[in-house]
Length: 310
Image (tube, helix red, strand yellow):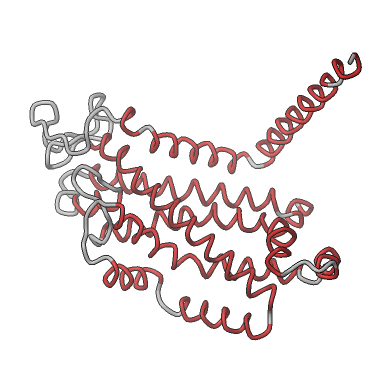
């Protein structure tokens, strides 16, 4: 009993040492990649703002108050991002609009990453005619301009516009489809590089099926490039959502704005009030740049070849 009573102490010390080691490693990575670390902080802040938009935004997105919100007022202490032509606070609309822009961005990347990972793993693992069929299908998708393909998809499967769960899923799926080929090609190349390694051959010799081998042995060893491409694709998905919303193919409405829709709404007055275009445009630029820089830094950290050469 005495031995059992004192046994947890070394385990606790080991756990604390492991946590301290991870903290030191994160600090070392942040010092080596300060730009990527700063971009990661910005990404985290954007996510927190989107999650707490109702708390951060001082007004509702569709609140029209001519007394409190003068028309086309320049940025000031009372209105940090100014007001638009409908007496609405731009700061509140940008904050609340981050929900749609980031929400669709993450949802589209999740869809594209899952589809691309499945296609890439199947093509790289089975090779032969399976690889040929998947590769030709990917090339067909890549043959269309991404935005044109998304517009074509939404015109057929989402003819009704508006803020709804169905429209959210359809727009996310449209963007996910256009980012799937890039993920699939990267995953396929990574799977081909580990397909003939000894641990895969040993798993096959032990009688494991293809699905078990891909899930238990191949996927964990190609997870790093999947994480990296997913982090980079978030910025591309946000940009694609902004483009679709600007073309009135998004899901935004008066009470649920998005950054692209705000640019579309302000196209008639931006010469008179520059902030109505600069503010949502800057929000899109900051989000895309932050996720791209964070993805680049993550790639350098997770790729052993790049880490050894740096």
